[in-house]
Image 1 (cartoon, rainbow, N blue to C red):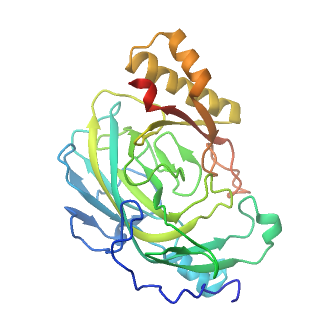
Image 2: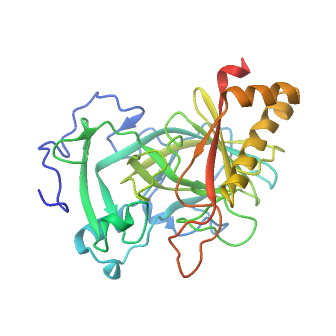
Length: 338
């Protein structure tokens, strides 16, 4: 098998129903979705542009955001960045949320992620922690996806763990990049916790919030140090709630058993401080704990780790793919709130 080939599984596209991959389905259509936004609604910025959809929050209506993997298909075909006609990391949307105002928080529940038949492993020259050892040649591999998992080599098939790489709202002014950095409003955070079953909390900076979603991954190593995961096309199915008057300065994610607070800053120590302060405020202000109790519990069981690889500040224009600053994650076990 060539390094740029497809692992020979013999099963790609012939999915056996019933295999449990954690709220992942293999039927990419509009069934069970109230509003399906096709990938033709893809854009290359988080911004308050013409909305693709207007919805009322709190209705439980399910919205499907179809994402695109066209850029990876073209990279696999041409092995040449100069021949691309598709852009990197489009996000689908935006969705205007009725009643959302600056100072509110959007709560986005991820119900499921519907994958298609393949993903992509791609090494972009000059990016990621392995850029020096991978060299100047563009590497690409088609990764079949089926009920047995993601077939990343002839010998290795891993259960898919689909997640959303890009999710965010519009900034107060202008447009946020869909590539880097990560922002207070979200963006290309590349957090494995943005998966089915989680609720992503995002600040609202403009009327309507303008939610956009893109960059689905079938599988991603924690931190995405190589800068590219097993990128995949699919549909993220979500519902939207609004928390009026709740102002947060950075995203946070609620899973079944944890709260994850995103820290953004440059240098990394600033990112850690901001994320830890937000967790502290959650305990003392939102949950009424004493400062002493919050301090002691955080010192005992609230872990911190690095988040995605995109940084937290705008990169140098001469080195647009070199991250500046850090994304850190600060984790509160929900069991301490009982």
